[in-house]
Length: 160
Image (cartoon, rainbow, N blue to C red; front, side, top):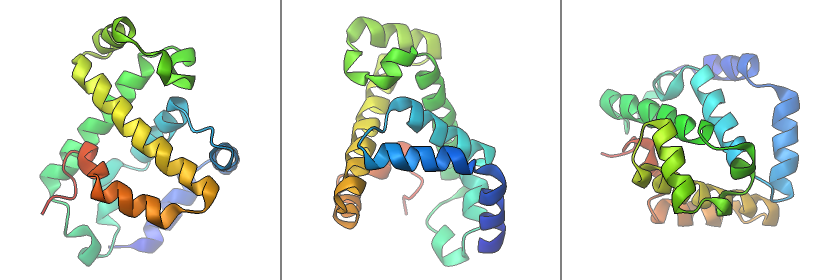
């Protein structure tokens, strides 16, 4: 792996102003689906999970197989498609998403309603984690998320 290349790639692809704005939003507990979509887009701009894992030291990257990385990248694209099918108001306030809106979003994204529900569940977990930043309880939150299987939505990326 090449950590230096990963850092250089992040410096080239990460918009510092956007990152600072996001950090401010997170510190105030205002992480929404639009921010989540931006994070997914940024990951894709950096080459997706395969590119990211290739740059990690081999002992860290061993947990992810190429098949799982491909599935994670496909899942990321699907998640962006679902979020892109929402209105700005729905992205800002996911609690507005009732059955009829979920059906419309699923149809627009070309997925089943269950995938919309899965994305919303993942987002709820991530939002909970982001709120922990605010309270300085991040280590406990991450341990809790891992125990609850929060990495499931990444296409089984970290399966052994």
